[in-house]
Length: 320
Ligand code: AHM
Ligand code: MG
Image (cartoon, rainbow, N blue to C red):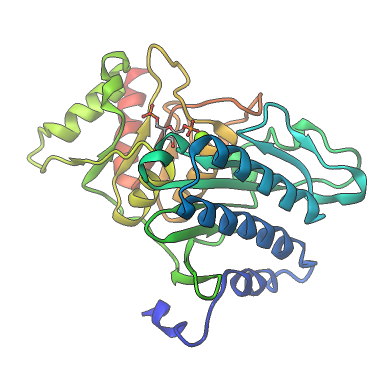
């Protein structure tokens, strides 16, 4: 087992990224520095979550920690956070080549009952001629250079893709380091779980309704799927990535664009799914092809195992 090999030869996340970057002769080590600042923010949030801080405080604290760590890294030019209405443009003296989009603490309504929550992020490389503008982040998700999340659960897990597969790292609290524990994660081609807020069913469109009906009452002799829904995207997506199946946050009559945000929820998770061999679809197109017009834009999303997402695509195609 590959993870076993690292028991004494500790593959920390920094070492992993340095190895990856050494494949690119033009690499200047900037990405490694940027990522270690994201990791620092995640370690802070992990500790704060474990101390049992209340939601309001944690939301604000987490955002501040990430913004400060990212700006001081000297490697960023634009930041988009779910917590801030406007994008942050980094002052000239601290400016670097990367744009980072993130949700510092997603699923935070779950904090007070101890359910797993997480940080989600995506990274773009920005053209460094001229002033950075919003257009530098209003790019399709397929242009992301890297994406990931950190889940604050029974252990603290960091899942990362730099566009070359997906790897999972677990925080070793005694070392204060994320160690590679889940090398080269691949999502099962087909799963046995569907994950959706069924309380919204009365407002769903036809394809979503048909799909969920099929999960429960399959007519082709296959067995029905199990329903698992935590209501915390990082936890629901993490389970989907490891066990397979499908996660849905569809459009409905009340929310025609669903609930989840394109830049820092839909894109990073779609990027990871594709990198793990799965798919991500909006109901109209491949999620990573979407071109956002606003930084806090929302989109419906269906992501997970290749075959399961293929089924929902077929149902939407039949509608047209
Ligand atoms: P948040 O950014 O306000 O925390 O909301 C996002 C969360 C996701 O983690 C989760 O997938 C979704 O909201 C759950 O929504 P719902 O409660 O409508 O099922
Ligand atoms: Mg969120």
